[in-house]
Amino acid sequence: MSAIDYSQKIPNNVDLSADRTLQRALEQWQPNYLEWWREMGPDGSLDFDVYLRTATSVDPQGWAHFDYVKMPDYRWGIFLNPAEADRRIHFGDHKGEAAWQDVPGEYRANLRRIIVTQGDTEPASVEQQRHLGLTCPSQYDLRNLFQVNVEEGRHLWAMVYLLHKYFGRDGREEAEDLLERRSGQQDNPRILQAFNEPTPDWLSFFMFTYFTDRDGKFQLCALAESSFDPLARTTRFMLTEEAHHMFVGESGISRVIQRTCQAMNELKTDDPARLRAAGVIDLPTLQRYLNFHFSVTLDLFGADESSNAATFYSTGLKGRFEEGKRADDHQLKGLTYTVLQAKDGRLVEREVPMLNALNEVLRDDYIKDSIGGVERWNKVIEKAGIPFRLRAPHKAFHRNIGSQAGLKVSPEGQVVSETEWAARVDEWLPSATDRAFVTSLMGRVVEPGKFANWIAPPMIGINRQPVDFEYVRFN
Ligand SMILES: [Fe+2]
Ligand SMILES: [Fe+2]
Image 1 (cartoon, helix red, strand yellow):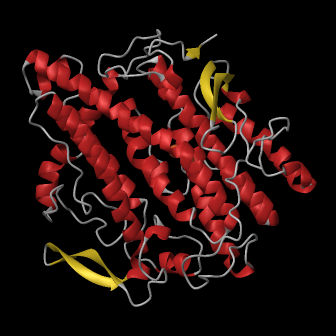
Image 2 (cartoon, helix red, strand yellow; image 1 turned 135 degrees about the horizontal axis):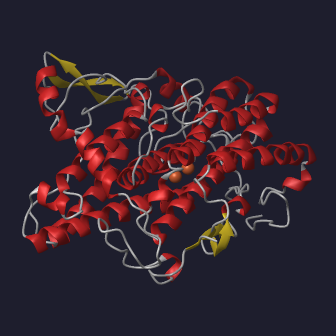
């Protein structure tokens, strides 16, 4: 069951050919998907042969097969982790009952909404990143971008499969709409705001894959606990793909830092102007990009108090991160959680029912996980003997959703006046000048083994290939 059948038009490990109606419906969606890819996928890349990995099975050992593929020929398909025998619901009001193999009528609308919201982010990120190939810092990086893009396409397939199989006509319509919305388009935008922002340069791309794909990880982890078993199984496999996206972000930023520190030591300076003149990204600019992507991503977890979050949990649709490892009763009634609120010009803590605070719980888990990578980046700076340290800003900094929305808070967590904010915002968030500078560094480097000046080469190549391997053939 875990082996993937590649003889089918739609590769799958769900025995798709046994369900003719579903197979036909998905085969009708497939050309529309490909049309979307041709229109909105990576700019000018249709004929490139790209050294990509493809899933061969969902077993941890047999995950990937590497070969040159033209991206429109990538074998997008439907891969679910194997079913767990006799899986039980392990949180919420239905705790102890058998996991659902079908959608309970009373939860249909909420489940559909959860699946559509997740599904919408997948093509959105491909759209956001579609021009980056034109300014890639190396073939190695270009290949990684394309790998992320085809896998986000695969994630769309994962959600569309659920919509088609379990949600009848409504599901089919939602699947069409997922190909109709466009990131950043005025009249038909993507659902979540962070997915309508452009990803204009590679520094933003690396920050996005580190921070925003990590939001993906946490959402998927919460859905992997779902009582709706097909959703749990499909998100578990998506998580193995997500890990690579976060690796691209973490290692990308790490290499930028490495290059900058090298220039700082060569020039014996920490003066941003001199470093910029040398064509590398100064550390304070990196900090501002970090502040931006961290804060924008925190908003994706939703309001700190939310009755929807309580409902999704109690009804068993969406669990917590690592639900199974927690020692409480997994129903959370009567428990409280601390959220922040502005009072008399200060942030104060407030206890609220934990069920209503589950967005905040997930956000706090995310913050812990994110900070781990920031510490690893600091190790690179420390090793270079430079006293600068990167820091994740306070969670109330630059927030647009929840009780801190619109509040002016410094990265250190002090509530500040509008005047102070206006005076200091260019220290805290990328300014137009910063963005213009980063843009000015972006030029296309595609000779194998060559890297743009602002980023260090990776330690090792992909799939143990050399760093100067021909990862993309342009034809
Ligand atoms: Fe994804
Ligand atoms: Fe991703």
